[in-house]
Length: 165
Image 1: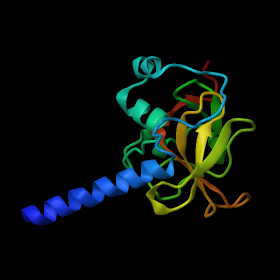
Image 2 (image 1 turned 30 degrees about the vertical axis):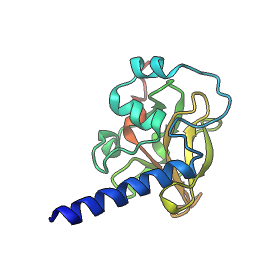
Image 3 (image 1 turned 120 degrees about the horizontal axis):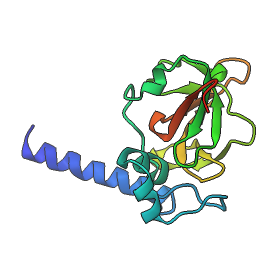
């Protein structure tokens, strides 16, 4: 790769990142709103792993195929890694082939959604309704009965097998 190609690619990547932040109103923080659990940025950094903090609080995305939760097949419940709220039941999980844990529906009163216009497209962002942590996005290409695909970051969740406390 030539120096000119490298510098041009770097400049384009920077512009795309800036445009994504501008579409979010200049914020890269977790979902805006009033939540039951509110902590300072320093508190979240102290309680979460760097990867969890990046995804839950800064709207990051883990690398596809990197989460063991994508391959989790046991009966149980997926919880928010930020506040432990139960989010998804394992009987609503399916293999979407995307490399991220996917579900056709959340548990009742578990999530909130907002419009995400980063990356020059409009998507529906999914966040924890209790702490506002970014979980992933929902798409309209899922299986019956909802036709939805809740494409979640595994690092944003923990798994509790059925029968465990």
